[in-house]
Image (cartoon, rainbow, N blue to C red):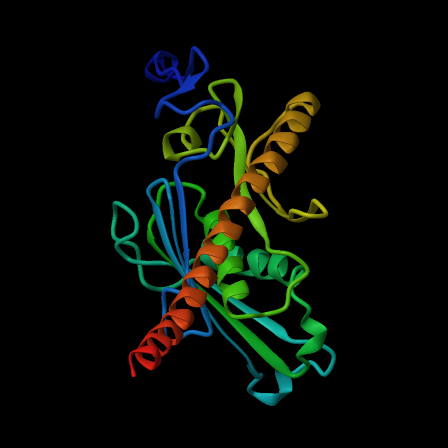
Length: 259
């Protein structure tokens, strides 16, 4: 650890560099149904992260040799826009994006009733517009809302969060500064909240058994907080849709009474 790092206190008096508590999420905003040309979509802001997710399908899987007669295929694509980071990123998908696409797609497969759609593919496309740590869990959270918005039958939504360590403390939802700490440990975790089944779990760094138990407990708690925001986003969309459908009927009734 350098002298500069020693002077930097990631946690002081129970508060972090950005003013949050140890178990506090960054501000999270989710909006469902933002793209008219997709079957389902979602826009998410999580701290500085800004993400759009779109779902297409189920559609016939082509070419036909990739079809599975027993279940649908999930084609999950995670991409970072060239302007999403401080240094311009290459538009070509890197190894990190390919790896995140694979593990995130597998996480969503645990939630979807794939057996209902044999020989088809469900396309889930996520674009990171602005990035500041935790994009894989934020993207997975947005993708799950987009799937629900598309009406894809699921056992539950997938809710995800990052948990880890910085400045010697176990903390929830690390930001970029905390991810860059000399003792940083980053653990992306995703679950099906009602059963607490873990569908994604990765770890970059080392923890003691006691720290791991504390981090897992905090991660599960954080996922359930995210779950409430996901449900509220879907509830808000469909309440607005019901209101729009009711308004023409009210106008028609009013006109009939006038006649």
